[in-house]
Amino acid sequence: MATVNLVYFAWVRERIGRAEETLELPDGIVTAGDLLAHLKTLGEEYETALEHENVIRVAINQEHVEHDEPIAGAREIALFPPMTGG
Image (tube, rainbow, N blue to C red):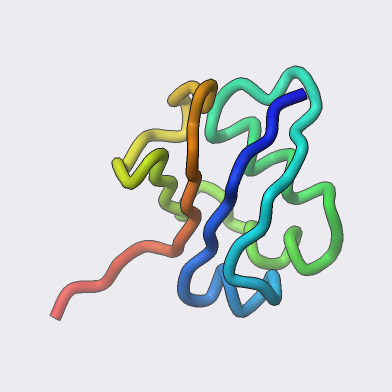
């Protein structure tokens, strides 16, 4: 099991109901996509927030990554919706 610090932004934070948390991840959670799929199993608020996981942006240690990026060794993983310009 790995421990990961998660930070949530914008409507992801609002729907989950917290700005950040530390979770113990089960073995088999290897990529950012695996993490998103796992989080959706933690309750209705997570499932709602991550319903359209393909639009969720992920940053590992403050660097944007694709969903197939490995998360091993991550100090912080941030999840947020697409950014809009303006």
